Length: 232
Image (cartoon, rainbow, N blue to C red):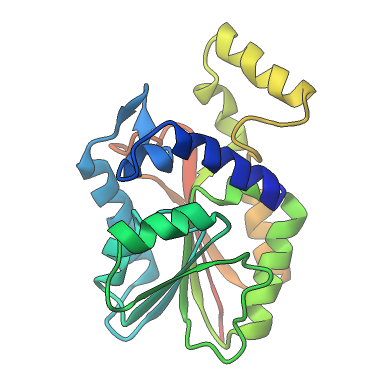
């Protein structure tokens, strides 16, 4: 996982280059430098809601909620939503622009956030797994198993290692990517093999399923989604 300091620094730089209410740019919901259409966000929200099988009785945890761009809509279908993020500034913006009576935002790390005795039963994170190492993914699932009786966990927007060069799809982009590797600061962080995610879940006694993103989604050519749930 990237250090908390690096993640905070990255988002601090983004925030310096945009308006306080430019929620799309702050969290990278752009394509070729322009804000993606609102319909793209609607499709992401739909994928989260449907794969989590959200109901009005659910208590949701949004890991890496950032400025609440997704949290606000997800909370509409749930009893409560708890959003956590490492960036104090993004949490401030979430509270200012993406507040609901059933949402609570916290500046925290999932590995230090207190889940003991929590009612949380649905979890998601979107375009966050790329900030994790392979080992930290296993640790995350173990932590959830330790503190939660049962859960359903949607992990969206995972960079697919098999399709890396569908994203870095010309010589200039490849050179850029290889340069970031030489600097030991890979662009976009970790690229994942779906087989590895499934293997870890199987070893921990969790059920899982790989989900292809909707073909109309602007990231569908290089990202995939994943759902994990406890079995009785």
